[in-house]
Length: 114
Length: 115
Image 1: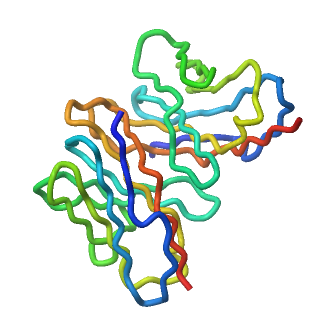
Image 2: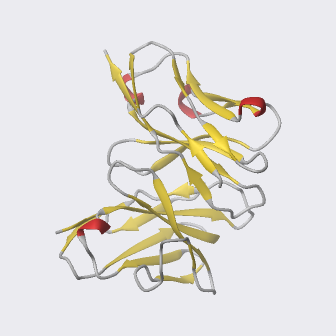
């Protein structure tokens, strides 16, 4: 069955430190990959997406993600975390072809300490 | 990206009643999706709604419990029927554009609490 795994339920980083959130997927073929962020009481905002091509994807708010086919991973990174980045982050995957179901990981809650 | 609004933003309902959630999009879209996010959990797809046809439900979700309407290309409703405390969740609608952008954009969600 198709699945998306985020092994870290909760991560705490200091403001200004670098961040990496892990994501692994299990799909028959390479899916489309996404990272969404959900701030408390808010909906989901798309940070970035990977469809094909360059394996390093730039997103909004200074985030980037790297697709590694050999590891079935799509890890999210940010070189310097800001207090406003505290939120829950969801990795998601979708079969290619348009209008397909999106499968979400269980989320990683990021806490930023001063 | 599409701008999506949902009504109500939150509600508290009594056991056995129903709640209808509205989702409005600022542009015409082919597909609309309804998700449930239970407390502390990830998102689970309830159903996919295509204008002019019946919604397609995921395993574990049935039309009698979650009837969906999709009267036009900018609007959909999800009703959660015969409420129980286990239905307490955030319900989100999402859309994917008519050109098949392969990206889903989400509304702000409706937080439902069932007493």
